[in-house]
Image (cartoon, rainbow, N blue to C red; front, side):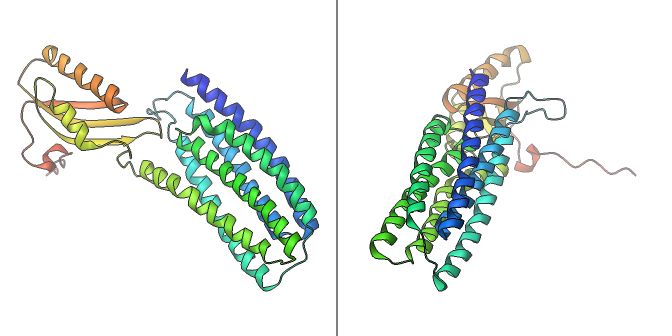
Length: 301
């Protein structure tokens, strides 16, 4: 089922990337013909989205590959890295549009609104279809980054149509650079949540929806467990979490402690979605926090 989901996401990202690339060419040509900065910005934004979709598709392919002796956790973080690169690209694009918009405010240009309307209608239909196709995979930060790109594109394209109508009805050219600034705001606003989750995963921070205190309490409640300490929870990827901890139990043989380990792993998987855990049993609680970590090797004399 997991492999099938990856294959489906990969196909959706593939055809979405091709459709987006075709729209980039249309928007750029129309922008140059109509002298519309908003259309050129739309082309640039969608070029970033093409790279986003292509990179996300490649990440989905990598995520489906098994681990190896050198990459023992597999390629779960490929999607996270793809999302991070996509966000960097979007931020750079936003700065470029911002500079161009202020320049256009000082030096307005005559705009052919008919081309803006036609390209905007085509782009709105395309972005809405792609966003709908990606919506099911939003639980993956990689797919969610691509989904947010498409939603932002759909909104900005709708605003493009509104700006074209406003210019046609009022004759005021300032609507074109103002729309470009609105597009920048939408890009930055929609990407903030993905920025936060991506950086947290790369820094191996605690997953947002997991509370370490609750995890520790659940493990401490198991029969035979005296204490839980040195607990760490982090994400291998947006969908895969890992845990390591020390659990103090009675001084019993491994054959008897196996039942406690099974209960601990079962509650971690069922309640918290943690299916990769490293649990160290001890019959004494570490006296100091640093005793749980690696001790320095003695120097040779």
